[in-house]
Length: 494
Ligand code: SF4
Image (cartoon, rainbow, N blue to C red; front, top):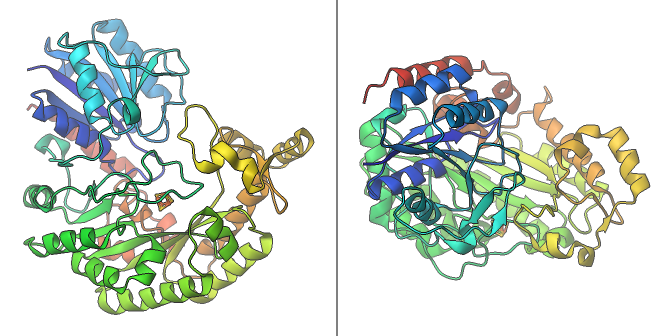
């Protein structure tokens, strides 16, 4: 049996185990390959990575892979790849992620972009000498070829989205793992650059596939907390009933957290009942804007008053019935069409007056135009929606005032419209976010932040009691958690 190692390059600062690498590993094991996952690879030291590699290496090892999110690629991994290539030149190195790699690596041989089960299978057959060359339709910054899995080997819908963790993953009971129910979103919001939008039918996995995964993780590791990866979990009422029924058959009570489209749950009272039956009590709502014209212009047209009253009604419902395990985060985007500083001020006041004990997150509108990014409608035709490229003079003034913004977001359009520009939107979003950390306020930490095992390994109940500021200042468990995990991996004799 051929074997390979898959290293997970986790996304700082959240640091939770992402699911993609485990899903690929599971799929490849079903194809008779021996795949081991090594998590938190970007926190390992070079000598530790070498030691692990040497302890696993034999003539059946033909490749190693790296799974990344948001293109993070630290020097330690580049140095590790250089060492592998020097000592074991026959080992092929693959990297894959949901987005295109923007980093430059001299040593990675092949890249895969997008949901990659089928692309990885085709590529590995090629590497192992059992298949022809895959379709490489894109080129990475280092000139190496990329497989565009989304278009060339689409892994959606999938009948099974099963992930089974292994003893050598050293999963611990307090961790939050990630689960998928379906891939893609039925909507097509104009700023959204997820790769699979406008999905027409319910393509969710079977209830049996889902319960088998959760039961396995509970029986073997005691796992009950889950992040849900679906872009919009409550897209279809039948799907909610299907999985609420499935959860009721489990011999334990899980807890879920994920993306819940707010206008749907506000207008469909049964959604809340089904989510309650599932114990799906961590809600991340893409509100985008409290200004109706702005939200409507991107495809979220519910009247603001109805939406805000509906959110308060939901808060009341879930805090009453949710066994003190409800936590909702509103996601707000600054700089949509018709958005103004006055809107941001209104949003701030509403949050302070109505949304304390819950959470929110705020971002400037990003319009990605880098050729390596998925494109949103705005990416393709932002000028039609009132945006312009900044003049060189304004751009230089903004860079001088906000140099870090310019550095961090250089793959976005530096836009301006009649109300603000990208740099101002970033400043307004940061100003809004700052009220979460004021001493006199009590906002909860963001629902996805709670999931980080490295930041703090406390249990769910303990984390749900914290405010955002206390959570941010929590003792960082990273050194002890990482050291324990790395030592277990290095000592594993399997
Ligand atoms: S923003 Fe959310 S609801 Fe809109 S298309 Fe993207 S994933 Fe779907």
